[in-house]
Image (cartoon, rainbow, N blue to C red):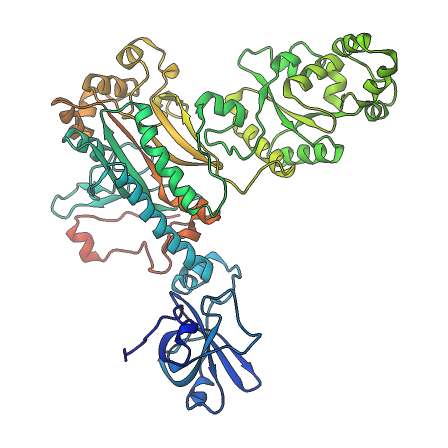
Length: 626
């Protein structure tokens, strides 16, 4: 018999009844039922109920074991008594009657329970991560992560991609975040950088004549952590293709991502024909470049209805051509209580408030207004054409705008807004005004809040979309200069003609993202593979040709010797796993994450280097007093 087990704790079935077996695992839960001990013995594969009664030679030792002790159990497999079967367990038809127990690893008092799913402080969970990982939900998430990565690999190879590994120690690169630097012992005063992404290497792979590359790539960025971005490191499904245009990349990637989501969605619907949403349209409709399309709300520009209106706050704002008024339709939100709640929420977000119009049925609208209901010219024309006996029905049922904005702009403008937004009685619209560049983020948050509060969002689905036509450059207000807005190695739409003749801030790029349920899960582009275009693109962002040669020498040289048109992208493995596991924090799908201060409190990193290590690296620390 094997030293530790003949079966795993998830393997015994009715077919083994009557056999002698040996199991090893953790004491998940121990119950004393009138002197008979029941031990739920757990390992990676499952759980088996072990029974120890006073007649068993193992009973005396069994009385001493505690939760999370590791034990070996020998015994006979028998069927559970009638009525005690557990259909939720694969082993639920049987139990093991223990004849011998050996303690393999006693456990001290636990700092957090393994049984159950009680929430514990982050510091405790990460300090004792090895215990945290024993918990059923987290353990399952980590295994799901591995299965998702396997599915990605399988599908990429089916699409004809070859897996390569690119270097971890490389040169610093302006990818948009801080590098992690690694001092060189052999080259005093010089540093390697951990790769923010394999961007240059994967393009050089295309220069080398390989056609389709991918890898599950570790990436390192010295950024502040958030719930959907781990500090320090993350993983991405990185890919590149030669002799392709944007549509070719879409055709290769879409079935991979769709297939992975379908495989792990547990029956939830997954988008089949992904929409293509231009960046500018996404910002205007959804207030973000990573829209949650489970929320059906689409914002609209209603500026013309407020221009020159009696609502002077908006009318004066619109005298500046940069300013606009956007409406957020709220189907079913036409109650005073809900509108006041949204207004209070906006004030809590640092806004002066959130203007709104409610639409009610005719009689309700009249009662609210406290007198005769004013009608618009559109409504008057309808009334004139109706038979006399239908007029009162129309007035009673026709939506009437209510609220301070409706009173200020009048019934005709209110009706025009209602018609444009497609709203009816019982609905509302909320308004944000000013320069869209400044209010767009708040508008997007308001859209999300309205959709969730009114229960318009279908959370049980995965909505995927391509976001396309990103601006190539953006204005860096801090440095007062043009800067890359996305990936500096992408091809500008219009090529050299655009770089030479257009206002840089109007140039679009062949750059694209994949959005899913409010998260950016992938980003990529068609690459700028002509050296003169590469130099010009960086020149507009403030880098001269010598700087380009110095910082991107490998790629610059490669472009001189026959560079194929190429493009690709990278999908965030961590965020995809997070979505498919139904959690909102990457800590729940990462095996040994850092805390929110970018510390590994389990291993004690970062820690101080010894004087000898610093001498070998020719480094002296200069820590500033706080």
